[in-house]
Amino acid sequence: MTILLDPTNERIPVARSIAPRPAAITGSVGFLDISKPRGNVLINRLETLLAQRLPQVTFNRYAKPTFTKPAPDALRRQINAENDFVIEALAD
Amino acid sequence: MSMVLPPFSLKNGRGENISFPSTKATLTCVVKEDCPTCREVMPLLVAFGHAFGADLDLHILSQTEAGIGVLEDAYSPPFSMLDDASLKVSFASDIDTVPTLFYSDVQGRPLTTLVGFVRDEWQQLAAELADKTGQTAAIDWEVLPQWRPGCGSLSVDPAIADRLRAQSQNSPLRARRIEIGSQDDEFEFMFDQGFSDGLPLVPPTPERVLRMLAGSSRDPQEVLALMPPNMGEVTVEKVAINAVMAGCKPEYMPVINTIVQAICTDAHNIHGVMATTMGASPVVVVNGPIREQIGMNMKLGALGQGNRANATIGRAVRLLIRNVGGAQPGGTERSTLGNPMKFTMCFAEWEERNPWSPLHVDRGFAAEDSVVSVFTMTSGPSLIVDQDSRTGSGLAGTMGLCLESAFNPKAHYATDCLLVVVPEHVDTFVRDNYSKSDIRRRIQEVTARPIKALVADEISGTGIKASVAAAMSAEALEKRLPKFRSDDDIHIVVAGADAGKFSGAFHGWATGEIGSMPVSRKIEEL
Image (tube, rainbow over all chains, first blue to last red; front, top):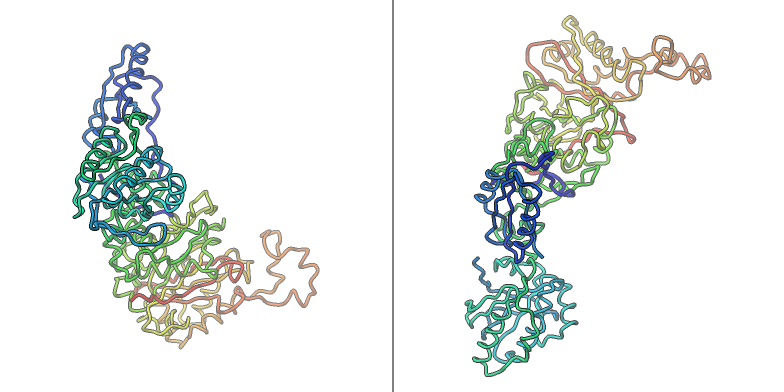
């Protein structure tokens, strides 16, 4: 990871451009559980519903070691490599 | 996770310093007043205080100053709350959740650490304390929830964690840190963020910025100026960040710092300079020993590309105007055509080839001072080609005729200019014993036109309005106006290669109080 120091007056949050939105959901969808209690409840329900509507899509499950910290680089790379889409579920 | 409570001394609500560790075992709990779990545990801490207060020290650290009053009013604890609004203890103890409760022995060594609220853990701790003290805390455990996760500690809030980390490490860096993912391209990222003038930038990593800061003797957090249009604070650190991006060396820092101070003056008026549709830009001339020290070009190609100091100092200033000031094309920067000087325009005067006094001495500084002079120019260098004149008056006459095109030939008393005289032209003037004043006088002489020649007509629709001219007397219409309002509006420096009779002229913008005036400033930190 590279760290850059902000050259601006810092009045505007750093914005990152988002990836283009595909017209259809195909390939693989990853579910990322951030490891807060009951996050899995939400993901289980979503997976059931999406599997009914998208039978041709593969679903993969992932979990962060702890909700308090960013996902480790290796996990991010794995999710990126194995999926076309990712859904991250927050609890609370 | 390695949470360890460091020794501390914090003030309570009465301003008294309370230290940890002390002469007793200690319970220390970090809370913030808007966290529901913290409010859940506050009555338990109060009960602990009543039961174990004689045998234990109990410290409740509030992460905000306001939280002390709020929580004391709400729960009337039998102990005073401590102020950790600076978050130094929270940060040093490496907590990421509130409440976090530390039970420490008399030496301050950790015995138990509880994060958030897990009823069994708290009940077990209460039992352990009861065992040691012979007292029982009056708590009805059954009515309490089994588990509450707690809230994020302010000390890990992304908005302030970097500052806390920098302070704890005695780092001079305070700028926001931007993490670029390992799979992202930092060069493309900087383009996407709008940091760039259109050319690639050197990534301003903390390591590079620290090296850049070593080139300045100023405090990195010193605010050099407020820069329009957004009145952004230009700290030395922000200068260093933009200098890294521009490709500067650390030894250029004193020059850039001084240029920033010069352009952010009412006289220079960088706001108007950037905003005008005319397309003005600062043009920087450097004088004094610093030129040689940092390797500036004042000779062959001085106004062009190829010299790192010339190119990157000017570029760093432009990036600061863009990133800290906030002047961006299409925003407040409204230049109709733009101007290549908006990338960079900075050069040094070849004082040693100058038979007259150098620019900074003309402007009141000592010859041994290093000085930056900032002009506002809308075009240039416009070439003055004269390979034939053998006299000072002939050459200065050519210069005058060329300068008459500034804005348009009928625009007299409208602007100023920066004349860059090359060495071969200098030699022509020297042979004729021609001074700078002579050059200025001759330019004014050959450009003087009767007012009637400056009136709008069928050849050119610009100029003095026909209706205005019609109201003037014949005598008034014969009055001759030179190109420039004052000889002082003709600024003269020497630069360029020894070979070639091609001087250059920059044409100015609106001069005087309504526009921009030249500003010279000594580089103090040398």
